[in-house]
Image 1 (cartoon, helix red, strand yellow):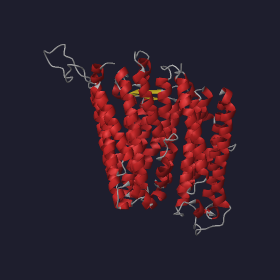
Image 2 (cartoon, each protein chain N blue to C red):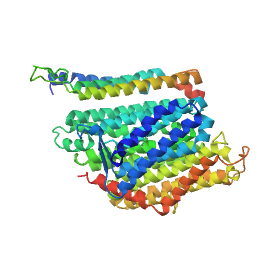
Image 3 (cartoon, chains in turn green, yellow):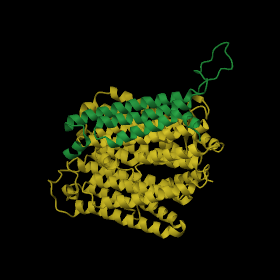
Image 4 (spheres, one colour):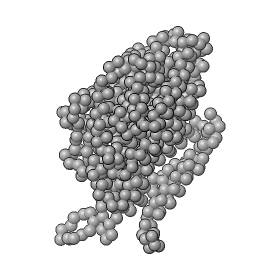
Length: 119
Length: 493
């Protein structure tokens, strides 16, 4: 695989790196809000993967217009799928933050090690 | 109506969930939610009876035919899973009013029941879907609802437990999402049946292999396969007692169902040596899970945590049966899925009964409870025996089938049988500890003034008697499981 081919997969490299950054943050951080930030980064990487794979070179939005023929369209399905996944991600984040708020009310801290010590 | 049953299975609880929120008087919210849960159970039973007589249910959502439309499909395996999900959801809801009253604020109860129905809808939706992305969406609906349910626990320790579950559950679901994204990239389809045929035409198989890895790991996280089970013990221990009954009986089972279905329907026919890789990956994990989790359960001091660890071991048995990739192994897996739900559901129901009087559920605090609560304790004994696999109970049937299947595993058969027998002895040891505490030890805490509330007691005994009933007459779950195993193996190379 030569350099150009490697660069051709630019989006997928970014996907892999962002995914790893997110996963590392989730595992390594003790602050619960930082963990949730990591989780969001982790999920965003997947959004990028889905958006990348539906791109067709020279393709536009799949809207049929009168008088325009032989138009190349990008695949709309992955975008629809990832729209759903984004909604899921947002609700997970909201629920996670709500739990963090309640943890703070109950324990007075959002550092994981201090919570473990408290019980 | 009959052809619409697969869709109604999801629509009934899902539509009722927001309506329940509007019912302010708590009795009404409970009654409405119970009616919806019972109706879903009736639908599942109706489909299971039809499927046991041969045949399956297919349904095109909105009249759009697969692979373009979203397909629902209910076969023998999904019918069995649906029975467990709706049965556990309805039984715990009917039994649990007194227990929920003790643990959840009155004004929050309509919301609690609404989340319950959403979890039920999500879990049932996973079982009826034949579309990979639909499964993801339903998985997240059920997960988000169950995070809410678990966080309802009165103890503050429920909150860190549910946070851990949320993080690990989301990572699992996202791994699954990456997996189906890669498969979609290579095949252009999300329909499971269509995927199987189209993967055969894919030139470069590597992305599919990566996808298989992501999907397997993601679902194993959701299913709490050892060593990815760390979220489970705390979440089950700290959840409100009725939520533990519901989730312990079915939440991980549904993930196991998707894992088995994906591997057998989609991947088995397309990869060389997949059978061997599948076995070599899952069998060691299953065996380690059985031994380690049983050993931990033997020394656990909190009765709910003890049973949660035992659940991890039982998941090991189910995965072990699946890892044999044989008719007898898969049958044993499916039957154990059903029987373990009965045994563990019954145990947690009885413990919810104990918890009506004993606030502290550590074993040493429960000493002598049988004297004041003889009926609840007797139900614990019956379900405990079913968990161990004493002849005459449902657990015996699945252990017997599993040993029978292990015998066919060639050179290492004796080792597998030995591990199953040793772990059964370990199960006997931890169940005996519970029985000894309840019956033989002198009481520590003040004795409970009376038995558990009667609806709770009645449902507990119904489940306990079902443990004996399906131990003596196992034909119905057995017929479904055999048909399920046959259907799964049709797709192997």
